[in-house]
Image (cartoon, rainbow, N blue to C red; front, side):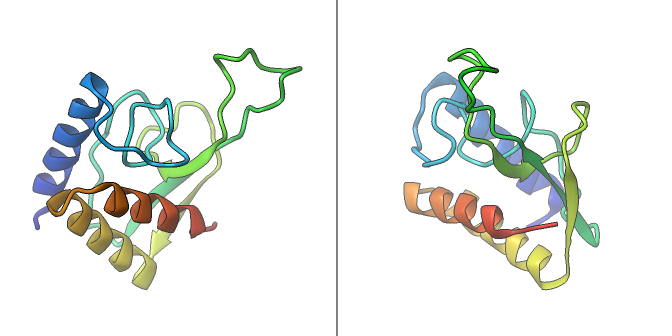
Length: 127
C-alpha cells in the first residue's frame, strides 16, 4: 500500500473515532484514538522512509501534580510534530517493516483485536 493511502486511511479511521468511540484499545481509553499517536490529530508518516519516528508520552498519573482531567497513563506513539519536547526515537530495519505491515493489516481488517495488537506491539518498541 502506498504511503499516502496508509495516511489517508488512518485519518478516516481517527476522524470517525472523534465522532464516536468505535474501537476500544486498552491504553488509549478517553483519548479518542485507536492508533497511538501523540498530538491533536494524525500527521502524515513517511512510510517509505528508512525509519519511523515514535515518541514517548509521559505518564501524568501523580494526583499531587496533575488534575483529574490532565492525568494519563502515557504511551509510545507516532510523533511527527514534537512541539512538546517529548523523548522520541527512530524505528528501523525489521522492526520498521513489521510495524508498517501491522499498520496496513490493521487498517484493512479493522477490529478491536487488530487495533489492540498494534498498540501492544508499539509499546514494546524502545529507544
